[in-house]
Image (tube, rainbow, N blue to C red):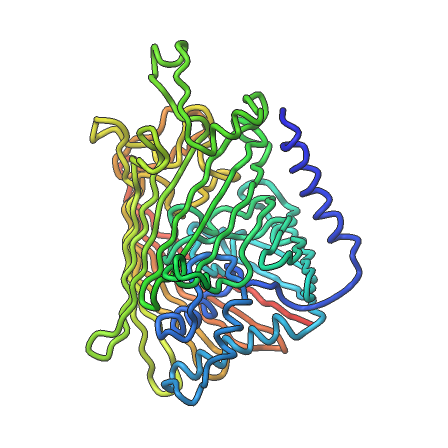
Length: 500
């Protein structure tokens, strides 16, 4: 095993240990995380209008560039709905950079665990008690977060998710910890990285301020951001302690267009080749053509790579704001990293409108992970799978990307509403065809879902109460199966967060 692998373990451990023994205090992260769908809707509205020039489809999304744009904006020149969005985003930004102490307690309870996750999902397990304390200074930030979970699906009752320590170096932020990531323009799901799975322990480096290059040769990129890092999977999988290299870059050449590129590869792990050379081969997409492999399977890529891109275009048509977006994420390549094949896709459209002092975001998304591999167009069951890393692109059994996993076609219609008294609601109706071909991967560690057609309506409403924020919600779903009786499920949930 290479020394770098051990160093990563040590660095992550030291990072978490440092957080636990630190006694200073403060507020909010130097970034926007994946927990607040309302804040994201406001940021997207300002970005579509050209108020925010930073790319906004990579989370964690750094506050630095957003703060620069807010400071250069004259609210009196904005439309009334954008004035409200500006005020809310500016409020969160000032909290992030101005306070020096934030401790929170969050309690969540539900009749059933959450089946699907979307951006800013309100809960995950049937019961959760979480406490956290965070600090943000000019150069250092940290968050200590621990939760106790009732009857968790992965049997991890105690978790340190969302804990981290971060340091600013020039225009870069280096982070050690477990921080949720979301790559792409979707609100209901994302193909490459989303909050479907819990965040993995990671070492990451991200550009802090997304300001454009000053040189004429590169300034046409517009504002740009970049994040890269290495994460570690759990032990309870086919190959324990696999490493995941990740890279994400995005540019915004003009205010209507944002383009993102994403890439990850799994390599190393217990019992696997774990040398510097194998790491380089995995990162550069080299092929393993040793004779003992090629006789039966042909050449294969080192590691388990996924790569893709996403594009979002925003404009105003007939005085109606419109956003159009596409994400394409692929499982393999024909030789070179850019020759990607076996691709899933997600397409979407959104708009926003206001009624009096109420702002609404409406979106529709279609997700297709019904991917065939090789020459046979009926050979599915390969997206998020890998012959060597048989647990696939998953963490504790949940895909890094789509909440619907592989072999699924899903339509989602969502509406997000915000009112001037801090009340808000989210509603999503889904029609999903899960495991559409009715077959499963032959790999033992791959999920074995039934063929299912499901219609689900999910609702949540948040409101201030008892000096905190209360969210109430529920879902109703009807499932049709081929091999068992149809089923109707109803779930109710609530969570309450108090900050002091």
